[in-house]
Length: 225
Image (cartoon, rainbow, N blue to C red; front, side, top):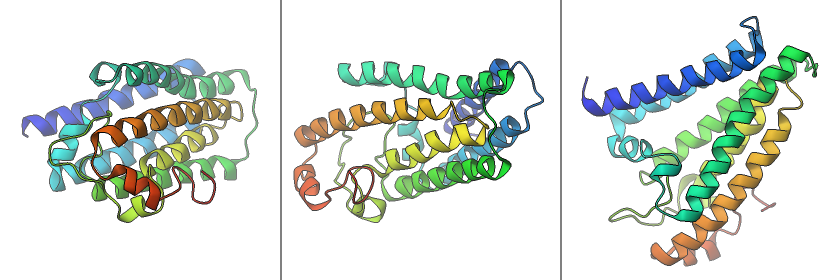
């Protein structure tokens, strides 16, 4: 196993161990079938994508491993990502607390629909990564990077964030929590803040991006915004 594969798999499993700790730690119980199902779905999706691109686009994996506030070069993006980290932690802690205290009663079909939304969100992210090898986890413009206008980028300008929104709203439902949807609203605000700042950066640093904005009108949701 080469160094990049080790780093990628170590990062994937470390994240999901932390995720399990947040979900079951806040629930104060492992008797949480919604939590286990969601955790396995989340792990299966992220592991599948990681293994696929380790084989087909290792440069993408290398870029994606640079993540988090410390990796960002723009000060505004560092601040935005700190807000995102807090909101993401809350997105898993709130459903755990909800389960422990019994605040919500989410029907099983809705729970399963939440898992489906998570899978669809990951599916969109997979299409984005396959179309755009420069889909970094931080805001940057790499050498020889060009504007991608095909695939999901022909529909909205930020399809990866569109996929993330499905995951953010699907996750609390999959975890059986109506109250967790509040964190989805907060994360939507963080994403909007991030992408608007990102667009200003790309307009300055990526040739052809302004023309692309004129061609593809919608940012996140077709016919909406």
